[in-house]
Image: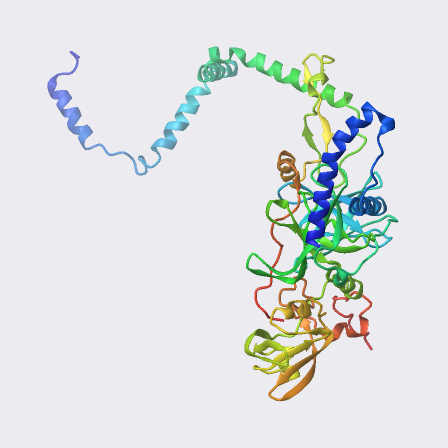
Length: 369
Length: 163
């Protein structure tokens, strides 16, 4: 795919160099010139341009410029609507820690309120009170290296701008540290102000959210849309993100067992130990995610919701065991629900009312007899 | 002096040497002194007493230095009159802050509101809501250029392979 893209570039440049003497010839004797038919490669570039233009025309109206105020200055970023009642995604750096949000939509400024700010995933959700267009949600798992993608953002103080690029990789690690889940690396030029912009496939579906730039703004990282949808699902169920945690440390095992080198190295007083997982077990599967190396648990862990029961399969000696572990809230969770006396709300307390945000107020006193 | 010779004087002095005041004389001396002074004073007519007291009072007040006192009193009364006139002439503000006490703040176009309606030129102040505390921070932010956001690093990382 890289070869094909560079080939297209050469053809475009060649076409430009040929076009100038051809134009001069047409001016001299228009009737004597027979115009050459564009090659298949040139046609495909033209088609790609047309597709980008089409995606931009369909999606730009659901992409908005966000203004907020933090303790230092006014900030500007980008966001996009994901439901028709005015809910929008943006990056945590735009909507996570600022206030007094306004959203420029349809030529007007709408006040917006923050409904989710999740620094672990790096996104935030805002809401305006208006009927809004919606960007369809795609599947980032269908992306491959060199899949063409489009972003639409508001760079600096400029109007909405499309950018065209391709998927460059799937990263779990950047600058020596690990993401909370695999991120999309995109070869797509970005500018300041485009944090929170949607990453779209050529069908116009959102496959990611721009979170941070790479060196020289020549590329960027994007959170896969499935990870963002997990956070939105938590919000719909509980009124807040609920990152789950079973409480096991994993490191690389010296030998592979059943194709996995992810060994449980520490299990303290955690849901994992309560369920029966022991030190030395080799992780084979967490939920629906198969584990082959320690890094695989990043994705498996990210999609665990506190309160849910997660089946975990391990190899212990010659046995293959499956434990059902009820996940607790992740220790990094900022909004740990507490009772008024300061004690943590047990996860089981939310189980009967999953569709309703938890009411953390103290229960009313029983009526006097 | 011729009527007394030295012998008589010497005799008199000897007698005075043995003379003793009556009991309680020294204890009542100050009280008796004031009583006699009042008695001596009351021997004068009333008008004379008042005149003397007024004279003493004026001397203590350093009368030449008080030459501007009537002028100062006059100026103070004039200011009070002007202020009271302005208070009565100023219309009642239509809206006052609902959450804070009013404060006097000079409007931006205050220079155009200098008026000569009263003898003294007076700047007209308008009633504005009291500035909230975060307005200072807002003013600071207003001086800071806006930030177009796109971080170069993610907002968070995972510390270990702990799940």
